[in-house]
Image (cartoon, rainbow over all chains, first blue to last red; front, side, top):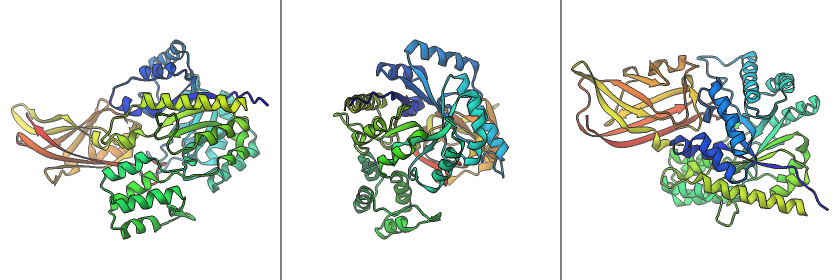
Length: 341
Length: 130
């Protein structure tokens, strides 16, 4: 049986943050590099690579559309943030939050971007209030499900209840593959070594992660001190706790669970840390995951999101272009194979 | 993240007003993967040769604006763009002696979706030539 897929490939420019940060590549050069990999969609973080965001200069809007035409790519996703704590001594009111995100919707419209990756701490009530505005401008709002949360975590279930009630094609989930991290990226444990973490602590973290037996950071909304205590008991330092939390927050959930939520999944962050020369990823089992998206009839973008950069850049060269090129090559192959079954 | 890119040593210099050396400057980047408004930046700590510089002696210049470090939390509009270099100016009559100095810089960013925010720290031994 042939299951021709309408899945499209995209690249999040987040993947090139290292080169952009050091002013080694401009936004245009990054888009050109993506186009050379026959990428279809481009994803951009307003706060990262659009100067002045959320007040986008007209000049940028013009350039953006020009680049899309010139390089034969299309806008796929705008990633938003909601800085609800930016006013001194108070948090934004609900109205202010809706207003801030309405601006994101208008910005997406200006840039011809069909979907916004909504940052994962936006409350369901805010998203529900935005639904009619999203519908009016035909911009999909996809809240990112990111580890350590899963699709069936309490907050996500609250959203799911709202999605099923609204039945709007304009609100739903974006799934980040930090949910499907089968083993700890080795570039993380190697960084731990460079940061002077004791070998036995590294071993504890790697084995614990890979067997999914590390204590959770929070248990029933309470801070769980089991991980810090274990690290200290092994003679660790305070800084080791920070590194441990930063590097092991990913989870390995069952990717087949996506099938239950497929009508509400509108975007995919195909997170990765290290593409090997043989076009496999060290820690995320893409060969298991991509066929599930095809099987479920997913029809949005799969967007490459490289996050190895920050684990290497203290001491090692970062080559985002090569990493993304391999990742796109892998996605292309897996999508082809999955469609031919 | 970007910890070791926080201190921009090329911008390390003494500054003069008229014929008086009034202090010194260093360049700085924020240790985070996106641009943020200034009010999200708290706890900037600059240590020179082991001595913590009091915040009230420091001003920040970024995005065409100069303001006291103490007042960043009152500015939810001015953006510090991703990767941009800001200038910290320290009021320090006489400046620093020419030669090697150990600079330590710590910055916390109150990005709301990450519990506890993010922080970065950079330590560099830098030669002051003017």
